[in-house]
Every structure is written in C-alpha cells, then in structure tokens.
Length: 129
Image (cartoon, rainbow, N blue to C red; front, side, top):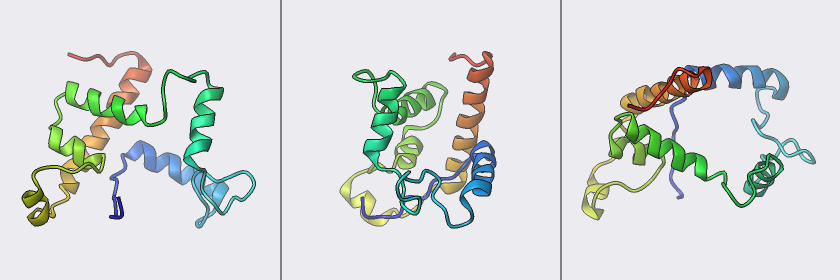
C-alpha cells in the first residue's frame, strides 16, 4: 500500500523472533529464501508451503487474515481497530485525510489478547461465547 504498516507484536511473537535471531543473526530475514538467505520468502513460497500441508484449494495464506478478523470480532474487538491492524482503509476519504492516528497502544493490547486467545485454543480451553 506504499505506506508503512507497523504491527504491534505480542510477547509470544517476540519470544519466537528472539529464538530465530540466534539462527539468522541480527540482520537476517525471519523467513529467508533457501537459495539466497539474504532475501525473504516470496508469497508464492508461502502458498506452496500451504499446499504441501494439504490446504490446496481450501485455504490461502491470506485466509489467516480472514480468520483473525472474524474471530477478533467474535471475541468483542472493535471493527475499526481490526481494519487498522490489517492495514485496511477506515472511514471516509475526508476522515483518512485528517485522521493520522495509529491507535497503536490499543492495537498492541488487541494483538496480545489475540495471541493469548490462540494459546487458549491450542490448550483446548478457549471457546467463543
């Protein structure tokens, strides 16, 4: 979208990135290409990985955004926050011209709640109300 998209990370993601840094070094890509580790994986590589996991024709990597959007709404988060988190346009043309807020602090809380919710689901204790 040609504009910076800053994503607040939950503590779980930060811990994983710190572990990966031991393998990649401080300047390495989180998801490097096999042939050229200085370059990141392409979208096509992610699509191929999903196919190898058996998701061909059923889901795309973009579907993870759909899942997050849907479930965040289900657990009560505001649509505007979710749309901003997904880097979607929010509001009218005029509002977008004047409103440059990022809502970063509350988006950070939302992403932490999302990660905690996923942990609960993984443990088998999370459920939608």
